[in-house]
Amino acid sequence: MMRRFFSVLLGALLLMAAAFSPARAAETIRIGYIPVLGSSALFVLDGKGWAKEAGLDVELVRFTSGPQAIQALTSGRIDGYVAGVLPLLQARAHGVDVKVVAAASIEELSVVARGKLAAELPKDGTALTPAIVKAALERFTTEQGHPPRIAAQPPGSVPDTLLRYWLKKQLGFADPAKAASIVGVGIDAAQQAFLADAVDAVVLREPALTVVDIKVPDLRVLATGHDMMPEQPGSVLALVKPDAADHQAWAKTLTALFVRATTLLAQHPDEALPYVQKALGGGMLDDAVLKKALEHSAPYFISDPSRIEAGVAALQDFEVELGLLRKADPVSDLFNKTLWQTAP
Image (cartoon, one colour):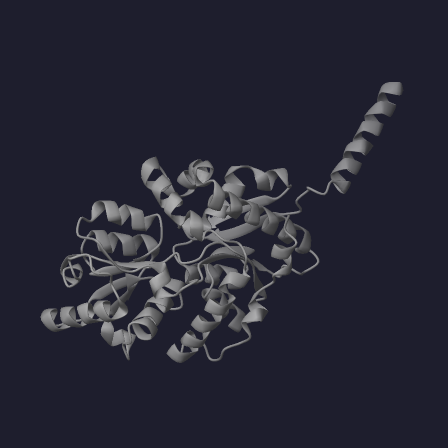
């Protein structure tokens, strides 16, 4: 009799503990990402087990471009997104209640060239100005009989829009489509096209930038991330309906963990290496290569969403100019800064 009493009591206590535990997760939280260093905070919080310790069942879902992830977001197949910010404008234009709750990085993208296009640049160490780069692109077009082929991601992605922005606003070409033949493909395909010498230039993020720098002897940097746009908006953490009653608890916890992971990446990139290697390397990337990429990127890992707001507004106006968006909405509507501000 006594044994049965204690069994019932123990069962009741376990049920009460489960019911009142603040770390208990109600369901799987699916977060889409693209395989670049800007997504590293997601890999760290997952790899270190912080999400599980906080009671979150987080599932990472891989995509090859921001627009591809947005399709999953709009169809309800994922609950959040770590990728470029601009495709979120398209999602909101289609009525999706998605908010940027934290930044992940800035100035991720650079433009690098090889072969005949790289040969058009000065070889005496002269600092590249927009005028020098523009003249190089124009000479290439005249001598080759066609504009240079530059690989980026699909229209509406950050790489595509930022490439066109750089060509028009920074270099001064009236029509970006005539200044370069822009090839919109997935991230891996863009890198492979460049390595195979199938394109003359490419827009890349880390760790691809470090990889191609090692593999392409005649590589030249046409524009750094800062050259393309100072404080260039990079990857972000965006969540669907973070203010909804059934999302608030996990959204707050996940944002806090993401901010914690971003701080670690900025201050101790070596500590993040094994988790980033597992997510991005897949046994194909040498630790030394990824370590170099992380150390190069460390100053650009930031979580404050206010840092990218002006850049997002400028690029939104440019997408309206390009006809990718019908109108420019208040950029502040895209952000929920409260979760970042309250993160410990």
